Structures are given as structure tokens and as C-alpha cells.
Image (cartoon, rainbow, N blue to C red):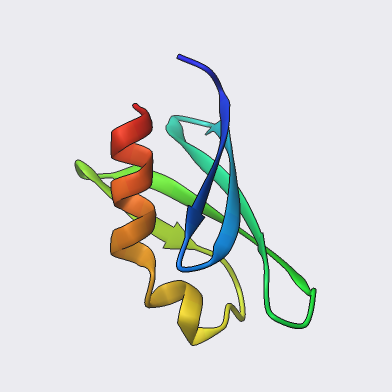
Length: 76
């Protein structure tokens, strides 16, 4: 499996980098908003599901969680 990939979701390009932290695996994700500000967060596998982890993320990122999970599942 390639450890990095990009996916356009909702007219935004999301960059995914596979990561491992302690006993967790997941992805570091970054994306730019309409103003060019870059947002970074992580998505870790927990109890069989992927969950967004990050601080002070805008609502539009949380609202895209299902689409982000789908993109990761398609890649894996």
C-alpha cells in the first residue's frame, strides 16, 4: 500500500499521509480552505472506525468526516 495519496472531495484537495502513533494507525490529513489557510488534522482507527482528531477545526471539516472515511477506505 502506498503511504500517501490525494483526493478531491467537495472541490477541495485533501492530502493523506499514513502514520502510526504508539499503538494507533491512521492518517495525517491537510487541506486548504477557500482563503488559502491550511488545516491539518489526524484520522485514527479506533474500535474499527476512523475518527477525526484535531483542535479548533472548522465545522466544514467535521461535516466531511464520512466522505473522508470513504476516501480512506477506497484507498486501503
